[in-house]
Length: 448
Image 1 (cartoon, rainbow, N blue to C red):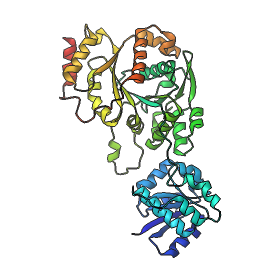
Image 2 (cartoon, helix red, strand yellow):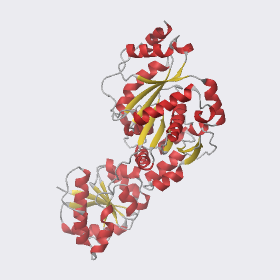
Image 3 (cartoon, rainbow, N blue to C red):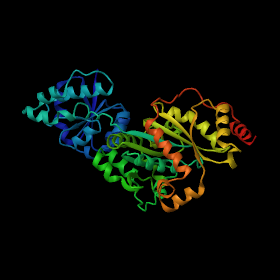
Image 4 (cartoon, rainbow, N blue to C red):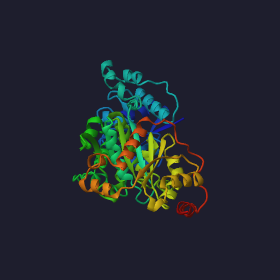
């Protein structure tokens, strides 16, 4: 079976000339003049592999994803930013590789991309193509189809999600991160809400830099190591402890910067570096962008969907009233589908008699049991607007401004549940809500 290869950069020409003279299955179908031509050829499906030299410095994780979506594996000639690209999944071709060895590396890369087992090792190819075996050993760890990802660290990802409206996602996320830090966790707080980022404002931060966007840019370039992540995050002192904060976008129209692959890389690095990563998610979970003609365009809700997909715990927050509870119930199936491996903790926020009846907690529990079939409500957070407003005005957390308040006690209990709760995956398949008049029926139940 023929294996068509696309090449970029004049340094690849001697090697591809030698490959052509072999008259084997690996054939060169396009010598591209620039990166744009290579991406167009890959997207058109002209090749099963792309060999790059000059121009490799401009490749990012997003561009590599476009090449792979076109069905091509990426190989980079040693000496052309190969270490960074190896970390992004490229196969490194030794600088003095013989045409036979390079052709075998192409076959191995294509087989690996297709999920097939490969019998060709990098060390064999490198040894065959190099005069000095020590040179082969220098590059071997980074080239067997990419640097193997390190094992997932001991950290956990906690996503704070809530339906549209103002259920209190940011208030819960900020104070949950603070309480986890007070419980001894090395905590990072990420503002991934692409519609209304407000973590920085809630903490009184004057820095206008979008920390999350900066971290995603480094991740896209393959340069986000632990030190870079810690430099990008701002250290915020809360109640005598430190919470690292990746601030949100400064403008809503910057959402294309938060591509799924970059967010996923950031989360994986955060898991390895920190004890707990708390992420304030956007409310929208639709994936309609996938139905468009161009499947490579950025997705509007990619950040939230990627966070939920990789979350260990999802805290679903809803408002305790006749609008907030139905919205929460109707949104839980989407959350369960987006986060199939996460434990779901349902928290009802802003609990008050004026909105949920004479016995608000009992009324909501009964309505929840009557109209929903999903996970039970684990936590009720009382509504105390004066206390919350005081903390917001001070740019502080409740542990600093109202340490003895009931709302702070509830959020501290939530932190304990996140740390010690069972690791059961959320149920996903069956719908949690039936009927179309749920809001009216719950409202009537609470008003009875």
